[in-house]
Amino acid sequence: MLNFKYKKIAFLVAFNDEVDLSLVKKWSKKNVSSMTLYHNKTAKKEYFLIITGAGKTNAAIATTYLIHVAKVDAIINIGTAGKHTGNLYHNQIALISKSTYGDVDATEFGYKYGQLPQGLNYYSINNSFNDQIKLHLLTYFKNNLKINCTVATSDSFINQKNQIHYHLTKSIHLVDMEANSINQVCYLSKFKNIAIIKVVSDIVNETKNQWQETIDITKKTITDVIKSLII
Image (cartoon, rainbow, N blue to C red):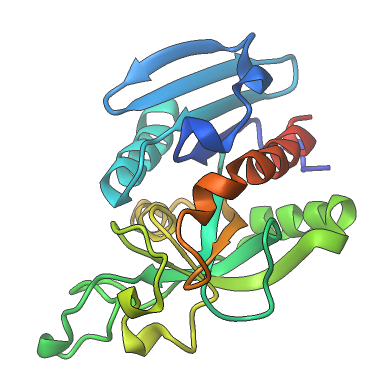
């Protein structure tokens, strides 16, 4: 169970299809900029679920809103991702320990691939909130969990190996479209209570349209994880 010092907890999800919205049917709902925000306040906690929309910019807008407007205590990004390397399988839960960009190339100016100028090559997730999330997942989802995973974020949906830059082939477990933007905004805002959880929806280079074929299964897993974290 999460420490009760975290009073306002937000879940960031990219698409409606990734979560069973019956979970929030009694929550208040409003549209803010490009996102849909669900909100619920109990005697002990205050929860937010934001459907950000796809891509890095939408994810960054939602994260900025949660930190500076809603002033949440903790952020959990949860959603689907494609498996690139490592011992991962369909519908497995992956806890992210660091993230980078999969479509940033400023190497001409001496930066690493994936590193924005003046930014970090990798944004690590190392905080007490994430430690609690890890213990929680190990307690409730141990048989379907992989920890210490690395994700690369791009504005392109990646389903073929030739879409992934060769510098990332050995170091990246997963690919997605939001995580590193969220992680970078938290870093720049000095916001430490972040966790990123991904569920494997497709295996890069296996077949096309796996995301659509598996979304009903991964949606259930994502929803089960969120339910378990709502106290």
